[in-house]
Image 1 (cartoon, rainbow, N blue to C red):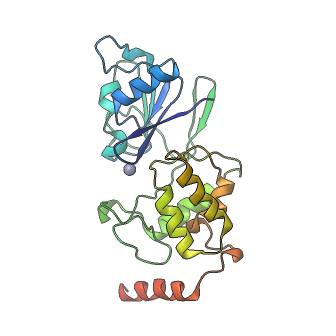
Image 2: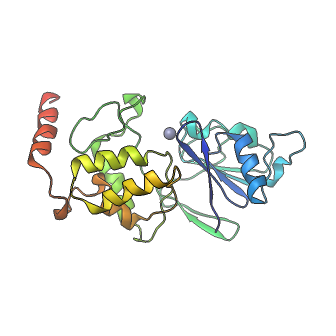
Image 3: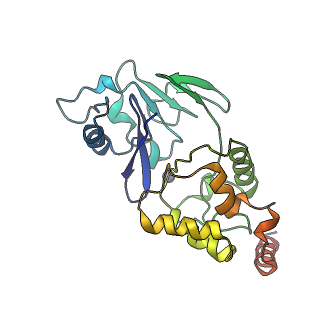
Length: 237
Ligand SMILES: [Zn+2]
């Protein structure tokens, strides 16, 4: 299976496969990537392009930066997989555990709600504090449940990110776990390439993603940082 990451906006990832596109926000860029890589996908964005060659869209979630390009690909017969009908063009609504085939690829869906929070509410909440509305932000419970579920996937499962936040995550991880060698490796990876997605596994995440290491003794949680998290919780109690 060949998966081609294509960047959209400043930090979004789209993914191009043989007959499917994941989160195709920027259709012209997908079109160009298909040409560059000789993929059998042409994308409806130029008058001569044949939209019918894209047979599947997979929309990870309905936020505009992931589903905002769907309209450019819609044609009779295309299947647009999404978790809800809020995604433009969605006609195959899937829920956690559903399975379907794309060519010879068998897809199993996993629902994991982890939209970022406006501000950290506790020691376990997201460091990504930019522009999301609190109305769509995952609670700490939802984020913990989602990461626990993903942590149960086979260790060698490749991880493809929705966004390129690796450097920020590595810096934050190093702040939380300064002696974690895996986090230092993650930072080196981010320094070496702007494209880190698809190059690591769930097993790696368990070593360097501090949000997946809450019950890992080796994480050696700094009591001062835990105290700060508890104080933040108490202040909002
Ligand atoms: Zn996003």
